[in-house]
Length: 449
Ligand SMILES: *Cc1c(COP(=O)(O)O)cnc(C)c1O
Image (cartoon, rainbow, N blue to C red; front, side):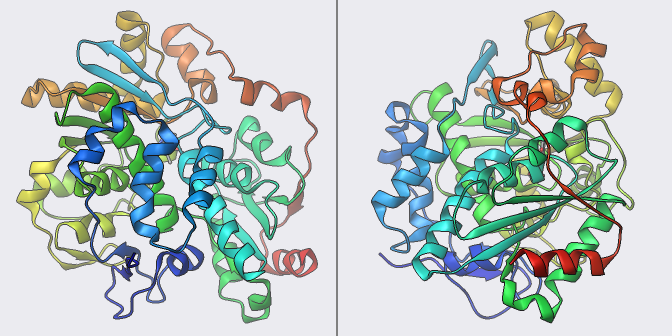
């Protein structure tokens, strides 16, 4: 089987295979890796998905990108192991569904990508007898998903920097109660400071012997696993090849990119609702054709979506024939009419988000958290605006118990802690503390090896 090559969205002439793209993270010219062509799944295979399990569908979706880089049996075992939790599709009312992506070990949809990426990285590293250090900065959900996903894997140490006072106690505990190969560091600074420290470490030649690698959302290894749940959901709600509408609560647009890749692979999708919070740079672009990043980003209650310039927008542009660099500068305009046909972009305010949490509970007894509520509100606006008889699936990206204050306020209900989180309070925490200075981090990393 021939292996698909991945090319940078910034135009670097040389392509790499999946293994390289995964271990490098970012292309040398700071662009994002995209497959040179998106493989099509045979229609006959897709029609069989209603009878397949989640790991079986994952295998068929991911395999074409790997060629012979990973043995079939190893890939199947990895996916069985990664997706050992339920993926509920809940009916809200006739033809309208919520896809719950919050049942993984850290209770956000970030688990879907992080768990497969971690296993693939370990597979390649074991083959080569190499060791690496994953260095990542987090504002909350990514750090815990990555730490959990790499927890206990050989060949890999994980160092997570988080802003000491900006993560919730539950988010912190999801990282600090693991131990083994996971090393959390509380930084006396903001998320931006953590990110700056990480960038400095990547650029430091004296750390090159450590083989630092990144696990942030620009890695193609985090994107492909996110195409899988779109196939899974369609197979559970639609008949035959019936197209579906998906509503995606969006921040960095990694989740949306998974859906767009699924569509290009042959999944029948009628429309994507791209629902953002007040960080409305993309809905603005779709309306006016002018792109203006929001700096600094606006603080909304759906805090994982507080992104003023989505890094994966460069990939969305690439799919529609455009080119955007990492700063948001447009080199070539995409086909905007084609984008408008596929994507309905809408911004939802905090006030609407809170009202949606309340109404979904009162009307349907469905508990949504702020991110999922942005998605559901976006879907309701789309249906009012355009009307559509396709089955509709709105993505719920986190467990309501991660945001108890907002849920209690809107509904009076205190969300039940899932088992993965209820044990957290009993475990003891271990983490380092550092000031906001680079020499402290460098010393720490040099002594870790
Ligand atoms: C990361 C995140 C999002 C946004 O996903 P993107 O891929 O960045 O668009 C939405 N909801 C939750 C709970 C998240 O953690």
